[in-house]
Amino acid sequence: MHLDVIDLRNFYYRSALGRAAQKVIRGELTAMWPEAKGQTVAGFGFAAPLLRPYLDDARRVVALMPGPQGVMPWPAGQPNVSVLCEEMMWPFENGVVDKLVLMHGLETSENPTAVLEECWRVLGPGGRAVFVVPNRAGLWSRSDKTPFGYGRPYSLSQLEAQLRQHNFVVERASSVLYQPPSKKRIWRKLANVLEDLGHKLPFIASGGVLIVEVSKQVSAPRRPGLGEAVKRPLKILEGVGRPVPEAGLSNSRPT
Image (cartoon, rainbow, N blue to C red; front, side):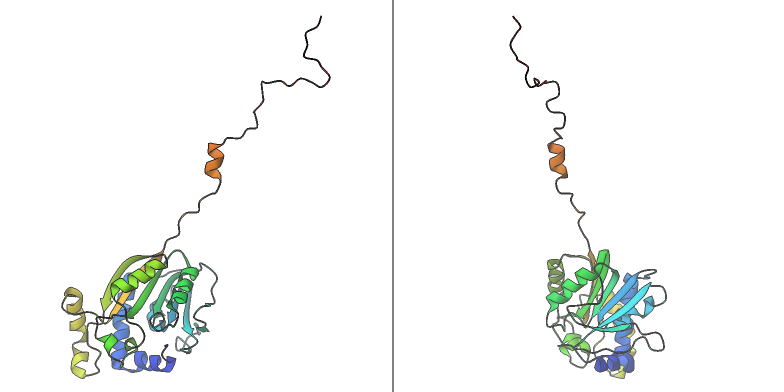
């Protein structure tokens, strides 16, 4: 079940907890993808807060928002790049996206298989995608006070297995949001300390969100018939050197 776009907007742009979560997740994404100069960058679900760093340099940025969620104009004060779309029918031709980000798009979908098929379709060969999902072992998936408390949480092994089933190659994975999903001032003050500690000592606590980067690797096309052609060379010269008698001539010796 997708959350309403108004609730998502209010969380990420109008609450201290949401702005803190946005900052941490976006920082992890930009560490993976420092730039996207001249590339096409797309997001699905409510990935708009993560796409802002690429607005200036990317050739094109599109924020796809699924119909059950609803759409809002984005970014504020600039030409709109957000688009309302069907989960299983994105307004892209095959293989035109270089970088793709999904947040609140996979775990809340009623048909995650179709979503992953669309991800594969729109990514170009060698294209990269990042999936941001709630961590089953983290605190954020256990609280309905944040958007990560809705939908299906994943363990890292579950998410990686599902991505591999759709022919994606897992490149790297990380977890973030080691701070508790609380609005209390004491936790807001300790947020940066907890994030640093969680990255250095991840065995102490589980991050609330998993971030997995994958690539689309396409096998080089095989040229059918080429091997057979080499194994069976042309027979165009067969018969040369073996003359055929002309019609009407006898093969008998003259008397």
